[in-house]
Amino acid sequence: MADIARRAGVSKVAVSYALNDQPGVSEATRASIKAIAEELGWRPNSAARALTGGRAQAVGLTVRRPARTLGVEPFFMEFISGVETVLAERSYALMLQMVADQGQEIEVCRRWWGERRVDGVFLMDLQAGDGRVAAVEEIGLPAVAIGPPDVSGALPAVWSDDGGSVHEIVRYLAALGHRRIARVAGPVGLAHTAVRDAALAEACREAGIPEAAVVHTDYTGDQGARAARALLIGPRRPTAIVFDNDIMAVAALSVAQELNLSIPADLSVVAWDESPLTQVVRPMLSAVSRDIAAYGARSAEALLALIDGEEVADIREGYAHFVPRGSTAPPPPGDGTGSRRALR
Image 1 (cartoon, rainbow, N blue to C red):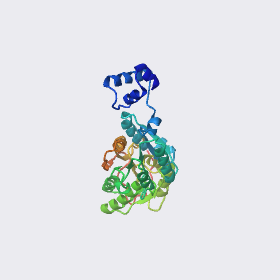
Image 2: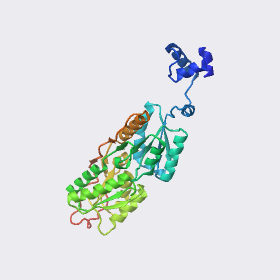
Image 3: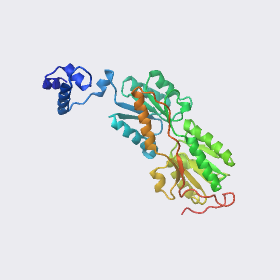
Image 4: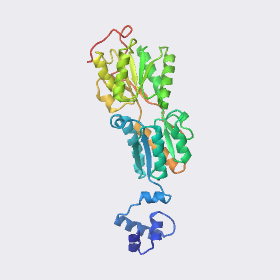
């Protein structure tokens, strides 16, 4: 600032006013100061601005899942890409940190806010009675909850109607003739898992078919394969399995091949959240499809509006629509346990 002041022939106070767009200098002086600053390559120090009550120009996201999840599950990368399109327009950065449990996640949020390293945070993978909601409200940290509004407290929620998606899947499979449907789900504690669990039971009742078997996992391919194997060698083998993410659905294709089952002649497979992965395997996987990048962008817009002091209401993103492809077909004749054709 001293260098700029000398070049412009003004005081450092005038430079501060000009660079921070505050009154106190003429427009001509402001323009001259900014031109010199640009010439000298000056950039604002975000840490210093935060310490003096300014903004950090960053928002935070903590992820409480295995680190390898980010590398293999397209959902997070697509969500973050949508967030980044909005943040980039406002010159905001995204701070991302993996955590082991909710206690660590709360501690990270407290540290970020105490050090003024972020102006707000996204809360993902909400749980019933989620401790993070009360924690960020207590310290006044602006936050947007990505999940059902019934567990977001006073925080604005950006959510998708997962129950509607489940009903559409079950109606389609029931129309094909399936009566034994199973689901390989995510962690039991997550709020959106509970929504899907309840919707699946209700949808089966409405379709007049037996209640679906549900196996909860950690979303990894290993656990998805293990769950699929247990279901397919069990006494009441399902004729259709719905997987809560694409990684587990793809892993199940190998399990079906192990057991000499043909997809979809012997077993129909549905993946949650269409991705490039669901379209490069053979057969292409039937999946529920939504614009995840747009979901991330809406979440970022809501958080920045909250940081700006605006009132932000819950935002409903509709629901993911079912897209049938080559992995779903009518069940095999009879009870579905006799046909064991090899994968084509």
